[in-house]
Amino acid sequence: MLPDYDRGALAIETELILEWYAPHIAGMTLPAVAQAEFARIWNRLFDEILEAAGTWTLRDFHSPNLIWLPAREGHAKLGLIDFQDAVIGHPAYDLASLGQDARIDVPAALELRLLAAYGQARRADDPDFDLAGFARAYAILGTQRNTKIAGIFARLDKRDGKPAYLKHLPRIEAYLRRNLEHPALAELKGWYQAHLPKLFETG
Image (cartoon, rainbow, N blue to C red; front, side):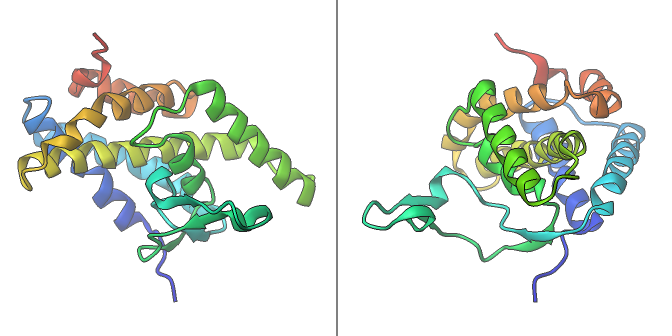
């Protein structure tokens, strides 16, 4: 039995950016009122995500866990590891994990091709598949995932003595900026700009 990727789990993950990235990377201690506003905005976004029917969600569907097996045929050429944290969640989550890989740069054009290919495959099975709605959920979950990872990588450096993860932070910040351009995330973008402006430093 796989647990649900529920509101509590999603929220705990987003809060990692407040607990670790804000003080140790951005050099900021956020006041309680700002943290409460952060939670309110995310709760509204989670309302949308949790309305959708769930499916198997591995949460670690990215390059280090994918293994090319050339001796096999078709889809069997793709080996997959690290599925012990699987949950039942929104189908956009793992696609966002792949399209916004934390350890290698995925150009925006390639990401759009992946999203379009997924949409085409879904519509082949279901002509009523809502690609625009899926893209909205993808942007929300891509933001949630990268918010979580920014906090995790800061924690790995500060608490666990693993500074090598910091080299990936500029990529994570870039994915966050990319996602926050979606209209569904306008309010959250305003929060990040006001309270974590470090995310928008690109030079």
